[in-house]
Length: 115
Length: 111
Image 1 (cartoon, rainbow over the protein chains, first blue to last red):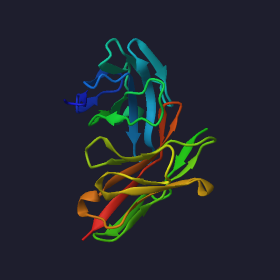
Image 2: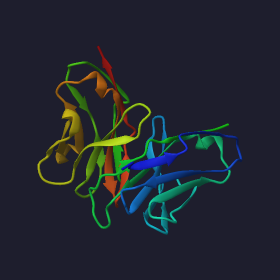
Image 3: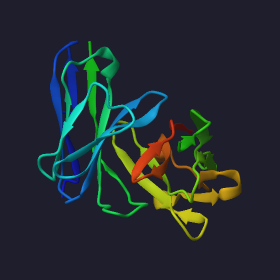
Image 4: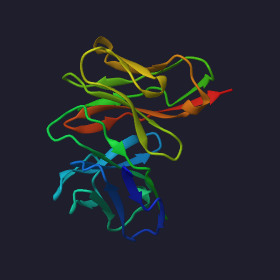
């Protein structure tokens, strides 16, 4: 039982390049989330998904796209990377259809640098 | 809008001393509150959560937190800090099944 895994762990991009971050969970969770973590700003929600085939915008969605084609996977895409997207990205998942107060389980993070 | 404030960016505590990390929230209804810990280079791990009942909540690793509605606070405490507690701590409030995080408090433990 690996929990939540993220690929890759580190990446350096040049401005304008594209990439996809992969999040996978083996807990059969319905909800999945992408956050970015920046110094002094905590974690901010980028996009989230409440089930396979559905996605929704979070607090800071601009410049990112997501897809949830399979229940266990949640992909975060950067079509044209910018230095402002240098950050640590965390994926999380939870099992909470219709419930509240449910724990989110986090992956280990992806450190992305855009030069 | 719901928000969480962690007023202390850094806190240094001597090993064996007690710890209190502050968290204040802004939320109209009964809040669902969480404390997460992030060890260096790691993801976040849930320490404890509050959503109803007893206002003193026990968590893992010897941590506890007290919900005080009158002060809109959910402070995290530990009676005796260990060097392994050095980490960043995040308070969060649930809003429509999404989490809103505070900016975090980095705990340093001195020998």
